[in-house]
Image 1 (cartoon, rainbow, N blue to C red):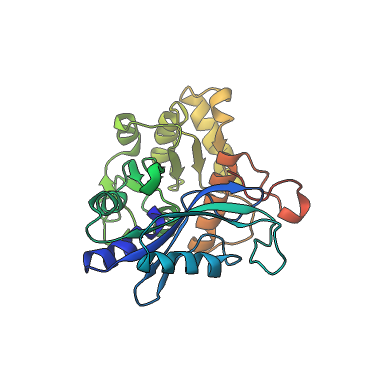
Image 2: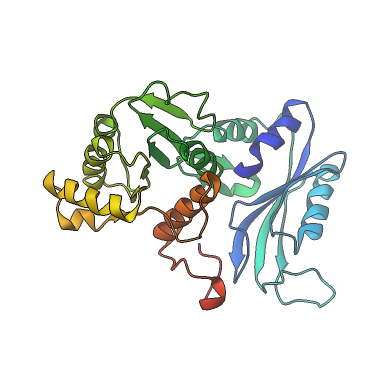
Length: 303
């Protein structure tokens, strides 16, 4: 539901109404998680999706009907039912709640407005169902280098609160990093010491300059950050390990350093590099292998 907040609010703020379908539960293999939503406007425009295509028509009709009949409806879409009935190609099923939302539904409007920020948000839906979105995790990019804008944009698209820190004021500017939520001119090691780093925090060091990298990585590797990566060649990596050991960082901490940063996807442009980095971040967080799906077994969609 929160993923369609901006478009949904645009309709509600203009006095319009929406028929909404929200996924409340999943069974088997499904492409979308609980909380995914589709909304339909009074002129028939669809916002969002709940299945990636397989049962969107059925969900659309459910949402559209709520504009004429506001009573909430629960349903299960997909599964192995009638061959003539729409179903998920992956064989799973989703439980959904369909309801009416109007500009006078203050709890819904306020929750959607709050979801445009980065804090934790809870939305009470009709029938007592509750959706909670946790506070956005942080992606800290050390170094306002040429790869930073692309990484900031990709990280923001994945729901991170993006923070860039660099000691050089000529490079660390909001104009050069429009996708970043925060841009700080500061020595990264000092900045990281003052930051409340959590397990969900991702720290990517892009400067490949020992004067910046080594102190920043020493702080990052001693923190609870779930991912710490550093850009640079294999030669740079070996030199950096030597400098980190000289600064007192032990081998156990160094084992947690992802360097050279990213998965081997073969790309080299800033955008391609950003994808390679965040692909490793996702795989590291989920415990996935990073191998092609055709070479793996078991569920494709991890919850």
